[in-house]
Amino acid sequence: MFGSIIEFFKSAITKDIIQDPVWATTALLGQVIFGGRFVLQWLVSEYKKKSHVPVAFWFLSLAGSVLLLAYSVHIKNPIFILSFSLNMLIYLRNLHLIYNHTKKGVVTVI
Image (cartoon, rainbow, N blue to C red; front, top):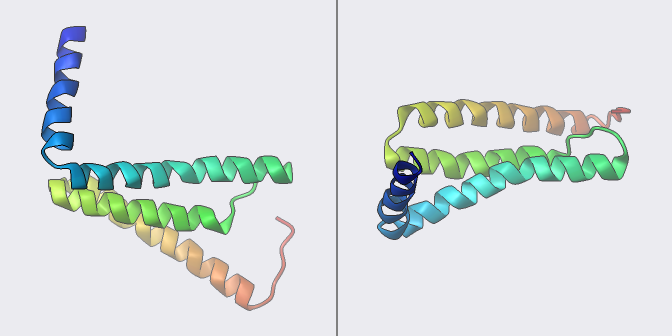
């Protein structure tokens, strides 16, 4: 069992990283940015001593999704293409709501 797992990773490293380092870097960067949004949210919540989702969370979500969508198109994976496309609509909508809210000068407690 472990032999097949090791072979899988050897094959993936050779095929995906060594033969295509630009796209492998794009995917890794997208995943780091996308995952980093939760680290940011956690740190801000700890700082504020309450649960809080900063605006930067949505920008990181969008940036990570754009990179991962580009990678998904490159590898021609329709499931990932669909999921990252739909996610981007949600992130853009949240950013639009935040923009409209701050433009009106409304201050909320949360």
